Length: 281
Image 1 (cartoon, rainbow, N blue to C red):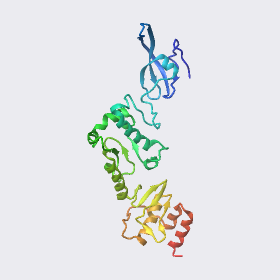
Image 2: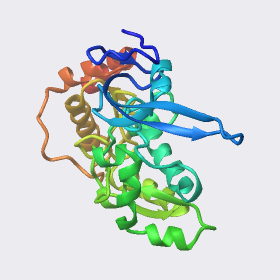
Image 3: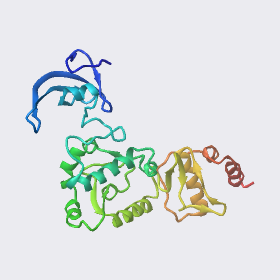
Image 4: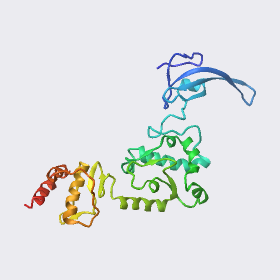
């Protein structure tokens, strides 16, 4: 990458900022003239630059560009996917900024302890920029209630309007604001009703494995974890018919020979025990 001096700008080369990607100079603008308290005149060169990654064009002091200390408000600096945009995050925006950033972190920050529970969630493109987020958020149901009740903590809830949906999305049309205490209840009810984060009733995705929920238990304990979703539901239905006939059943699933299905049992020792059990040995 090229470097520039105050007296030398190369319009044919690409320059680097410290944290916001590469940029190029487009044109030099009218200089900025300042006067010190003593009346001393100071002239600062100003230029229009364009960031390569986003196409954002902004006027900057040439000396700042040379140092690399220029900022692209639309560069996805937050979790590699989101940006603040051309707005501020303090003052009357602080409450919404904290909620927005927490939402981005839950969904996209793999170091966040909550991230695993949100791996099937996404944030709509409009809400990946805080500037457009604050423009659309007043239309979200419950927003005015939150503003009118500052003593109550509110959550951006994605579950109420997306009951039973696996790949949930945060967006203006799929979210509402509800008190945090109610949001916890919604999460519990959503899990309790669906009993699943797979397409089958009674199967839940847990750490990349398919777990048979506690609606079906045997004298030998829970049915266990499987690396294949169809195998899990086949084993679950066999145990349901034998030990829990009143439990809700799945009727539409690809049938698999049980001896084949239990090969996907993540605990191999338990798989051997199941072979003997199924074959009445």
